[in-house]
Length: 307
Ligand code: GLU
Image 1 (cartoon, rainbow, N blue to C red):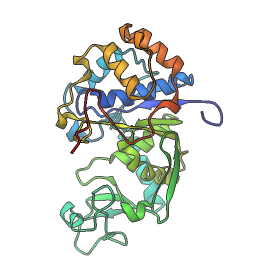
Image 2 (image 1 turned 90 degrees about the vertical axis):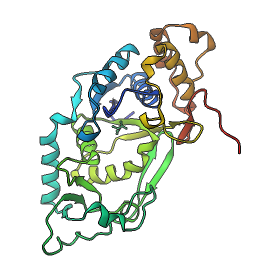
Image 3 (image 1 turned 180 degrees about the vertical axis):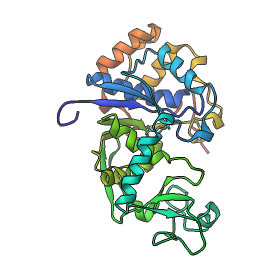
């Protein structure tokens, strides 16, 4: 809980496909944590990355959440309606010289050193001004050296030197779209989000987001990163790994398995109950301490391969 006892949580799916077991774990985990602590639970459609939007996915997400009885508070926020807020934040950063225009192409950056997450660290080419004759393509945040740390409710203390690992990161992309890192920080702050509960695949973005919050004068929410659901080959479930959409399975069955994945030990007789009964049991009995403190967890039915 925050100092003042308020809790505003959220679920922020990208409409790049229907919810699969992995995204359902993040939806249910963030919902249960919010409801257990009598908090609000907001829903935001993260469609800032237009090329990744799949027609119909947004409606499918609403239907699935309704099937599971995961009711959100207030109106759904869609990033496509939030461009003015992102533009205002970017101009504030420009005024404070916290961002700079960048002319580098992907290929130029690909030739630079590899960052921890396999991406390429920005080598700082345009940091002190555009090279002569080159036009601005994107805007980058001027990363500050030194470790940024936060205390994750599940994963413990996490630290990263963003400048050393990622370098100056993009806030406004060469294709004219705002970057996820800026959108998520502005959206969470405007909605008054106090608790961010999401998949551990986003841990590597969190320190960048904290740097941005500091630069914009926003408070940093409490973070909790759930293990990401992986298959036996260690791959995150996604459309690429052909994870089934959760609405092809009986909802009570999916919810029971999500709870088991989150370490919540639902009593076996609950497996025969309806989805509303399981959900109510889970709100009352939600226990963060039982969630595995790991970055990944095996999907139900997957066996580790021993080699
Ligand atoms: N839109 C992101 C996703 O679907 C989640 C972002 C977040 O929770 O901060 O993976």
